[in-house]
Image (cartoon, rainbow, N blue to C red; front, side, top):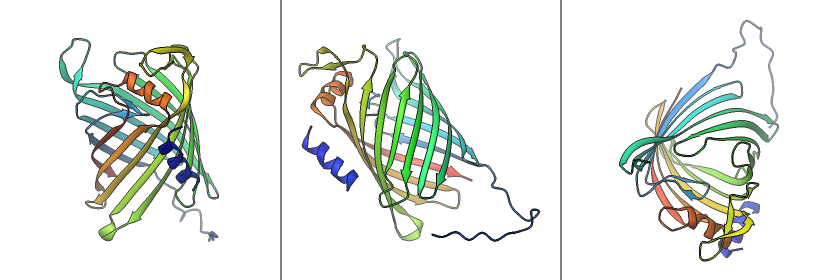
Length: 264
């Protein structure tokens, strides 16, 4: 395992409520909430994999929530996508939708969900996930994903995050995560140092991600968040595996952009 992997793993390891009765007619039920955002990024990186070829991507997203239940619609617009025709055109090459339920038991937050990935050029994918987080320093959260359609496997992600309050309601948001990937499908083989597939199905500590963003509220409803991220492999095996699938023949990716969000 690489030294930088050990460093990130070490970091990751590193109120009474009074209810006053009110008449039923006066009690207000929690209403639905909605939000939307659009991220403009220099690169599309997902779970350590480079999914855009030297092109800017625009990723719109919309979410509706009510009493813990949520529905999210997300897309990826590649502004210079090389499709099957060979022409480099702007194309919406991925559309995902997520159904989720989140709740809290004391300081523990729990979540379950289902994700459908509608992908361009390859078969669509489906995942279920469960998550558990702790309302404490660095908000550690463990999320386990299970692919159930064409490429069965497990993806386990352990993340931390923290926001530092700044003047004028701004915040500096930092986050980091490490993940483990296990494929059940024999079509995903480990790759040797010459980037040739071996006989072993890929299963290893996979990717790490560090990100920093500055949230700047514009008014009660709008905010702008510029940010940067760094994605890197956790092991030599992951380095080979990611490099073999990337457009740039690399496994470390530094990228950034800006997110414009709206909530009401």
